[in-house]
Image (cartoon, rainbow, N blue to C red; front, side, top):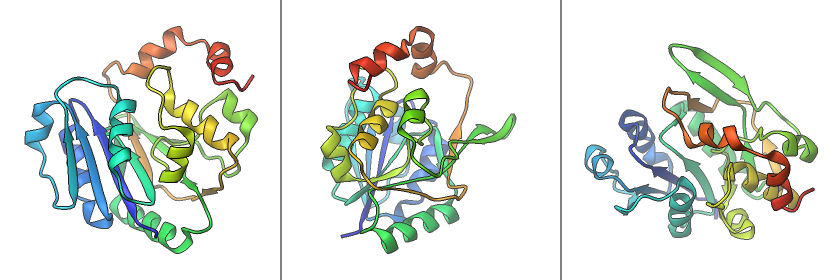
Length: 218
């Protein structure tokens, strides 16, 4: 098996960006979309290979992702939110790479281009080698990296009751010695906007020492 599931979790979505992601559905074996606001549910064109999970009650992105990934049938998972964007040609390159090398790696990661058309774009997360000590200092792995579903199962999914759960997820993945591959290609774009995100709120009260102690890594 080398099939890939695109998993999208969204709330009060950026509809144009979400639709761009859904328009790439033909590249994937399946798409699993988790929405919990009616406006998003009725304003996107859902492809035929898409499963839709609609829950009216508000939940965290982590809970939505866990719900969606649990239903995904792909051997590989590409998690996605509506603030993310992949260039279609580079996304095709990524998928073809995974299909050719699916037996060799557990996680494929790449640099992040963060910003917007007004402010410009900056490259970060350009780390070819996985360095656990550096990862404890800062999260340089993209949220939307491709990984085997078995990785998510081994880690126990995303924790929804801690700050920066994607960072915690990657720390646990690296601890388990899964095989990583760095793909130096401008694949992943993260849109920065002016709304106050959960991460902004978390960062003001974040205690990194307590965070790492709670994870059992220091």
